[in-house]
Image 1 (cartoon, rainbow, N blue to C red):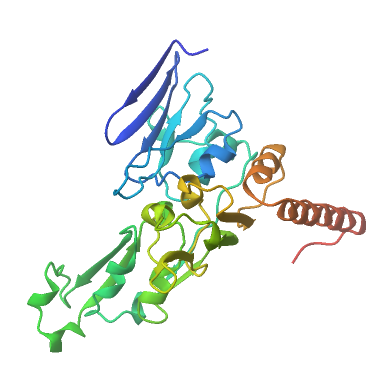
Image 2: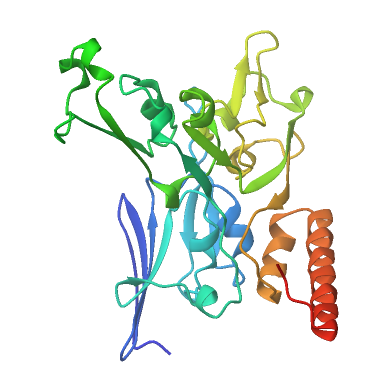
Length: 310
């Protein structure tokens, strides 16, 4: 048992701590990064995380739900840290980012497949770094002699082709929405989603003039307002199925969201199966369990026959 527990909240962060004899466990929720989605609340094995919806004020835009964490229930396992698509939660032990469920190989990690080819990026392009809805792309331009260009407009257009380009992406916070892949010059960005699913808005059930889901959606273009029918519609090209929209929707049946696949590192554990059961559809669970069963059977045959995997 911890010698001391602490829970502190500021405008920017929520912090929980366990202080033991030799270890200090800390959970930090960055409110600026958090979008009030469903992922952590669904996956938490202790049901320590809950969403608090803000009351809707007539004439104002909807606000994202607030995340609260029960210190009496949280055991700092790190599952919320692993699964947050936006990197809003971090678990540390004695100041070091440490996830016990990963160390024990009892939980997988999300596969954020983000490929960047800076050689295909025109140095004079400005749209790429501005394309990310979460501002996670950083482009550094260097002169031929290695100096950083602080103001691109100060460089004559004819000289911009001589600049070298370095592209960095804050991968731990990237939800892999693919917006940059379509807005950056062709071939510069290649993103693979790690959460797949389906989203459908039953517009006939949406309240007149309601745009609550669009108000809180963190991904530009994942939801859009149609002037034709005055309703919000999804664009699954960019949706990451985080569920922030589902949380604030005032009509339960109006917005349907299902996660059908989550790309993760290999693992075989009951903890992951339970999390997947809450996060994804039953079909996805059965597919994954069936695939694991087939792999185990194949491995057994390999051992019996003395085969070696290529």
